[in-house]
Length: 426
Image (tube, rainbow, N blue to C red):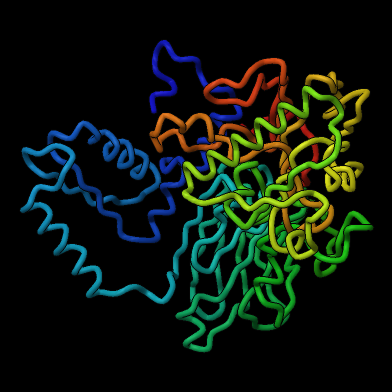
C-alpha cells in the first residue's frame, strides 16, 4: 500500500509491529512444510512480489518453484498455465503425507501457533520471532530446536501412530527429556533460567493441555491455576487468546450497548458515533450485521460463547461497571489512570482488549470495532491490517481522521501475562 513511500507520514511504531501478523516474508520458513509454486507474467508489474519472497525463502532454505509467462502482464499465459496444471496434477498424484516427519514452525503471534504435530503453547515475547524445528527420528524420539518458545505441545506424528509408535524421548535444544512412559503427546516447558521439563500427563487430550481460548479453569479468584503441577497466571497469552484488538473479531462476538447515563455528555456522544461507525463498517466490509445487545439484556450464554465488545464507560454500561475493578484501568468521572499515567476523564478514554473477568476464556474489548474500519474505506484490501495493538488512550477532542477515532495519545502491547509494560517488541 506504499505506507513507507516518500512524502507519506510513517505509520506509528505499533502498526509497524502489527504488520508482522500478515507479513509472509517473516513466516516464509513455514513454506518448507509444503511444495510452493509461484507465477507471474514477464511483464507483470507485481513480479517483484515473487522476487522478494524467493529472496527471503532462500535465507530460510526454502525452495519456491517459479513459473514465468512470456510476453504477458498480470495474467496467465496459456502454455505456462498448462505447465503449472501438470505440476499440480503430479503433486496430487503423489498425494499428501499423513503428517510430516520434519516440521518447521515460525510465527510472531500465537494467533498462528500450530503446524502439524507441533503446537506453540506460549511465547517468551509476543511479536518477536518464535521458532520450532522438529524432527521425528523414529523409535519414539523427537528432536527439537527452539527460539522464543517456552511451552510446546508435541504430538506423535500420525504416520508413527499408524505404526503403533509413541513418544519416549524428546531431545530439545541439546537436552534430553526421557518420558516416564510412552505417550501420544507431551507438553514441554522451559521456565526462566531452568532446563526443559515434561509438564504433561499421559491420557490427557491436547485440547485440554493448551487451551485455545486462553485462560484456564478454576482460578478467577486465586489469580493462578495449577497446570499439571505448575502455577500459571490466569491471564496468560496462549494460542487463541493473545490479542491484539482485532483478534476479538475473528471469533463470535457481540456489541454490548450502553443504556445508562455517561460520565459526561461529550464522551457519550463520542461513544454513540463510534458505535454507529463500527456497526456500519462491519456491514460494509464483512457483509453481515454485527450482533448487538443492550447491557441489561446480556445473557449468560453470550458471556460464555462470545467476546464482549463493551461500548461506553463504567457509568453508562452496566457490564463494564460490573468488571471495572478487574480491568487494568481506573476510570471514574474524576480521572482516568492507566499504566501509571493520569488522563483527563472528560476528554480521554481507553480502547483495549483483555481477558473477560466474567469468562477468562473469552475477551472483552472496550470502545472499538475492528481497527482498520477507517483505513480500508477507500476500498483497497491492502489496508485491511490492524491499526491498534492491545491498548490505546484516545483524546476525543481531536476529530477522527482516515485511520484513528481521535488522537492516539499512547498505545502498546500487554506482556505475556496481560500486564502493562513499556517494553516494545524488538
